[in-house]
Image (cartoon, helix red, strand yellow):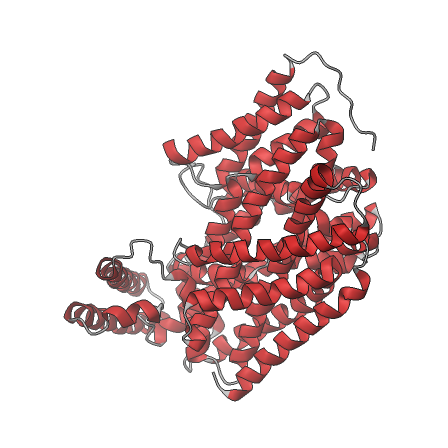
Length: 557
């Protein structure tokens, strides 16, 4: 990067950390530190909801996935609007009127303390792993830009965000989220404009979409009901619905967002804002990845985007041979693409598709060789596509802006997740089991310590996350092992009057166990884990409850 790029990035980082730390004045008491005194406007909460979900994983992992796999991932979000409407009717008024700090407090009032603790514990495990993946994504960026070791960059990113979150609490999280969302949107629009402007003379935006469409990159709906197929209309509408109901309705990182709103109606509005802006925003991010694919039709891409791994094998004879075959395949594809755009005939299209298939095969050969030569079977190149493209092809200043946008996405999610982890740890465990009569000062102090500890834990997880595959898929896989079962507990609490504490507790354990069985002994894709976990938890929880003749002491809300 050049001095102007560094200036943009450094200015952004300094401002965000300063802006977060200055929120300390609002975090002296428990409700202020964890819930912002329930005083935030709906639009700020709505942007914070979006920012919490829009991590650097979205910008790095999704764009890289769109480059290789197209727009199919958009189907993942088709169940989101319906999920938000359901939550606006159920979870928002339940939690807000119950006057709780965490979603899991409600479960103690509806069931018992052990159900609350177990549910909160599973949240802590799933979110702790998830935030580690969220930290890993921007670390990929810095490792490429600076040539640093990934472990160094992981701790730089993770701990810098931990500091202002630890000091400022949820006020710092929300208001920095608002500013970061504007940076992200601006960066995306600039990125799209620059990519299109760098297409060869005579190749328009619609020409680029023609090439992408011919290779299936623009497919946004698949009607297949194959449970082994990762992204289909049904996996998004059913599996995605269960995932989003759990994530936005049972995950403390999201529940805490709408609990900071001024009223039930403003909490509902914040969720609806996210519901109807998320799909267009995700479409735009995926489109950036597709445009990168189009750009590389006419400009030679790297055979391997991860230059650290390339450096280990670049001088070997076999790598040089594969690189020559790859360059030749790219040249043939470039000529075929130009011919297809010029002739627009079926024969020209088939020639282009054959050239694209050969190109993909040559790239796969290169990736397979790197895996074998470096003895790194978990090696995955998709997360390096977008950052490599930005650094190698964007003009001065724009590189800094886009990297700042990726930092913005990362820090907004990391801070929200760490704050939620600290809240659950403090309220559901420290205050509930160890210090029932503590002062506000003691709880806030413990919350800050918990934030720091979770920050360290997440950094450690991040060191293992970058080679697990597409990061956007990895974080959702982590969540899908727990989310459906957590949702099942809340379904029992909200909708099954006959449900008892024993049923909820053991139903949750059966649900988690069923997901483990499904992941190890079936080939169904991870989105369906949410359905399996929820259904098993509800059914087993209800049946076990029938054996308990005790009275239900449901909370009145």
